Length: 112
Image 1: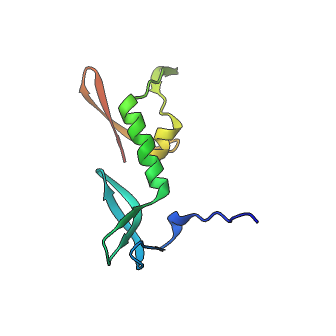
Image 2: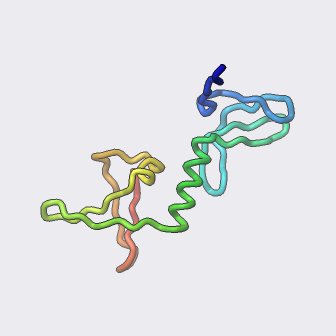
């Protein structure tokens, strides 16, 4: 018999280790706002597996950095944003971002 996979990230509540129920909540974890569950009884917090994977991938990219090539589109230059990074920031084709020069070696990108 095959086990049925359940997407727990969509559940409004999950059982807590203390025997009570943890309810869906926005949680602060390592300076990130993530989806998860919090038990009102014992205050234990559970992070959504999906958000946990995103944070792990983000931390890996942050630590090692990403090298991308500058492309030319018509008379403009373009920098490609790798798909895993775009997914973390929920970027889609056609979105507008703000560029702010920090110094001669750094540009800040702000997503709306």
